[in-house]
Length: 308
Image (cartoon, rainbow, N blue to C red; front, top):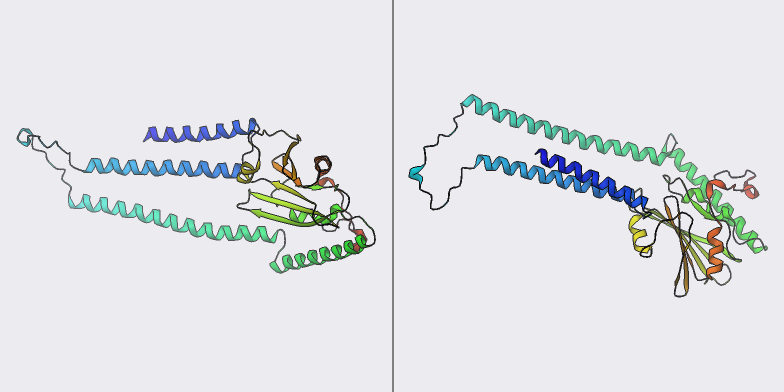
């Protein structure tokens, strides 16, 4: 059993070294997925260990299997181990107690996990509010504020104002809570506006956020700005052989579309549109961390950045 323990430690150390090597070599790899794979492999090793252990016990308990042509007359008489009634009862009681303790630990552990997860989720959802009523009231206030801003912007555009302002995105409502960085485009081609967004995830670490922009008049020219920390998404969309190098643009023509890919800390960025590569590059260079910008909603609220 000691050999199996040592082998488990070696596998764990190999996983850590491989992850370190992948990060150092500039490859995009999601730590959450990698940790999940590592835990599954270690769990499988534990299952194999348990199977081997029970097999060893079974081999010890089963009688020795002799060849078919073995002459039993030459064997010495084997005496089977003799257990007293008290010893048998004591051993049976010990096994039952151990099984009972295991079942109790498993049961209370699952119950504790269930209620702890509920508290954790409730705490995340409340996000600093004391009650759900306060949380929902704040959500309603933000929705009303956003609707007011959108109505104001429609009127402003109709009167010849800019079709796009960074405030239109409401970045803090799109940014995943655990992300330290989130980017917004500060410059768009003339007549482009912010139309919609998409937000998907498979787990807390695998978010994909998309900002969608269209030409205001034609509604045919478009730009998609995708921010992803999802390893599976990135591995399926990054060109083969691409290396992670902070700030470097990787340009690619995709038929009638152009695409630029670059990296910002732990986020992979994709900018794609049916506009020229020159225009697309100007847009990519305008991307900025929303934390570094000062939002101004004073036109409708009188207070700059009330919800940002």
